[in-house]
Length: 195
Figure 1: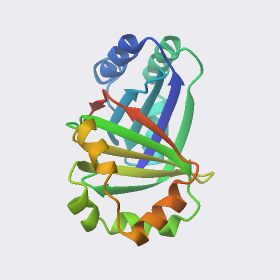
Figure 2: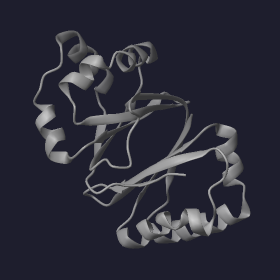
Figure 3: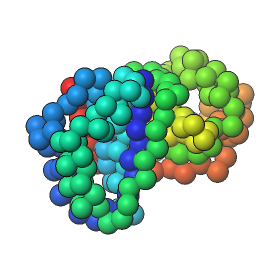
């Protein structure tokens, strides 16, 4: 899987959401497109996490003339330039997310130990038992080592209640190391796109 993360300031929320929701109709979904998760933070930052089956298919989509025209319309709806992060190193955990998620948290930081991340994501039995409100998510690492983790929850209230449940000590230590200096972005009204 390949993930492209798009971030930009945007106060015209309704306009941008309508534009992203019309993409499949206006541009047409290309082969290899797996879907997307979108939303706004409380401080008017747009975040889009778009999934493709490979980098090649994502780049082929970017090169389509109709995609270029649509991207110009998107840029015009933003309050500033978009920042793109391309991630070829992607892991999926639990159910990988859901278009039914009521709350999505996007966590970004520096992936200092990829083996640690792989070990944490491979052992999800305890996570599912302790945090049933977590549907699943993705963990995407860019070439520079920065990561974007997207976690889909059933709803925000359950997610907040789950934060008060301490994980096992060894997992807590690993999570503390992994998330040191990370930023958390709450998408309280996320929307989704699927093929």
